[in-house]
Amino acid sequence: MSIKLNFLNEEIAKADEKINGYPAATQDISVNIRNRQDCIDTAKYGPMNPALPNNEFWQQKADMFKTTVDEAKSARCGNCAAFIQTSEMIDAMAHGLGGESEAYAIIEVANLGFCEIFDFKCAGSRTCDAWVVNGPITDSNSVDEVQLEETMKSLKEWFKEKWVDISRPKAGGGFEPCGRDDANTGKYPKCVPASRAARMTPEQIASAVRRKRTAESTQTRDGKKPIYVSTDKEKVEKANIPTDPELYARVKAEAKAKFDVYPSAYANAWLVREYKKRGGGYRVS
Ligand code: SF4
Image (cartoon, rainbow, N blue to C red):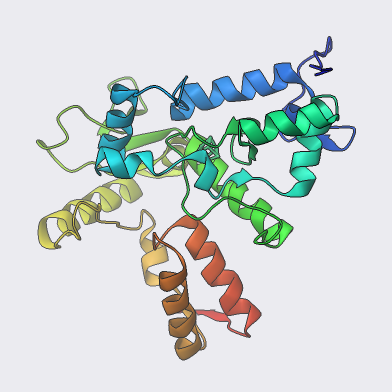
């Protein structure tokens, strides 16, 4: 058996970089380990050995998704929309492992795929906090590459973004991070990406916090879903209106039937693409 693990002596290639036309992490084990560690640190990728009960790990996932342990266990890399198992990707991974038949056998036994969000080879039986419904991506269901790249790029940016609570300014400047231990008590938070918070004026912050608290105290929650309030007041006033509401409603109904979770970044991307593909447009109100 000649499994080849490539260690580069040069500076580690950055995510999204290619080596000989292949994703770098499929060819260079050190890039793969680094990106996998990023996924462990950022999104609690695991468990280490999926064959063990890992009760604590699955309980944490169930708590995070506010569901049962059994349901949490059904959300794995193997059915995540970021998990790529096209023949092209399998060839890339096999090439990085030496390209011989043993390499393909390892990929099959470990049910390996390539995580498009964190850029590393992940195992189908593991999972992480960034799991997205409706995968894997295979030859038979691979979507338009440009669209896929755009969707994954926005998911990547969204997941890695640092979020802050603009209703809780810190004494020396900036804001407390999002998420509190006392989530069931105290005032409602208003969380936005830190980069966004830095661009907001005091008036915009006060307005966003006020509208969020008004909505929280006057609207009814759908189950445990948070109540969403646009951070940007102008956006509320200048919404994108579909120019063909009937077509939009039809495609939206299809998206709801097609995807297990709606709305979601993946379902929304599909809806927008499909609506435009069928001739739909938008106007600003
Ligand atoms: S994003 Fe999906 S494929 Fe990537 S590690 Fe998380 S669960 Fe696995």
